[in-house]
Image 1: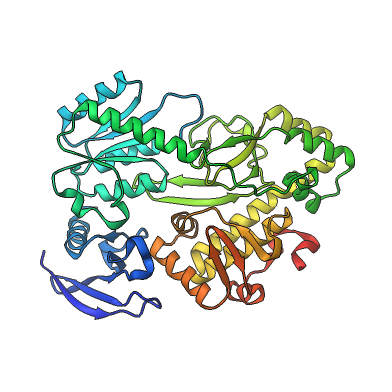
Image 2: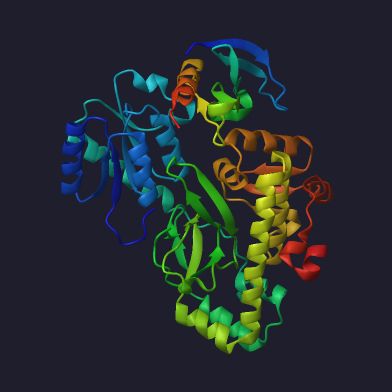
Length: 81
Length: 379
């Protein structure tokens, strides 16, 4: 599994605009957004703004950094269902 | 929290089997009931669904990775946590867990027991905080009587009966399970103060809240017909609740026709509310969902005299709102921000004020018909 990040601005309708597209083997798998200071104790964390296919989940998690987010995305993609 | 009068239960999640057994022995010797030891997050979450612990001791290095997920679930359930961490691991906790107490590995059983005792004492002190006075003074403020008066015509004798059965509420702390999924139902709960919820917990730790019980609400009139509860009812805030014995409910239904009519109508309203909530999670946007919920709570609380000036106590966290509306806490925070920005609401220290009810109603396409409040809803 080869993950690649690409910085992107995301129109979330909030202060959270700094994002990353996450590609898995060239396919868009997720969009992560960095939480702004508006979120107080969650500020600076990365939020799974959108996930596709196996990365899609109703309980979208937040991660302390991009490495943790990528580990989680990899686990989702490798999960046998 | 487990029901009153029981032995304190502690969830033990420890990746190392030997350490797990040692700690389990030490905790049992100290008088705790140990749930576990679980070696993985998944196992711990399964235990959590079966019984909610009073405390949790969690290893930061559980086998299947996401200890953070377990910690968040425990947070959500209001269970105090002590964490067992490798040197330096505390630097990597997510910001919201930064304040969680932790012990450095390998911790001695003696230290673990002492730290847990301290954590338990702190939690008991925090829970002993006074129940917020949501209820106006005097018998006219009895929320059950107010609610049923809106649904039916009560005689003075009916009012006396209702005042009598609701006279001695029991105080419960936030997080107290009134009845759990799988339990044999034993009577009907009536909320006199505070907010309780019906919810279901998934093995993954995800929770869906299906109903709020606000003052004057009672649950499942005919629950005694069932052999086991299919969901859990938990006090979200500090609450005052009355448990009506099945005989009391049977007497109300058989011998007090107007009360019976009011209670049955209330049950229909509960079902109609559930339908409306289903539309919420299935077919409304985040902004519409929260706007709808806030309009509904206003009318329900107004009906029992608890929403003066279009404002009311909202003793719930953003996580609770997220689990109610099927959103993430991030979306709840953004959405409340947007409602504020549009000048529709003000939310301060868990008191919500609706600043522009007509616009909020229009935004949510809120039609109060399902609450069957009669003239009260027209206001």
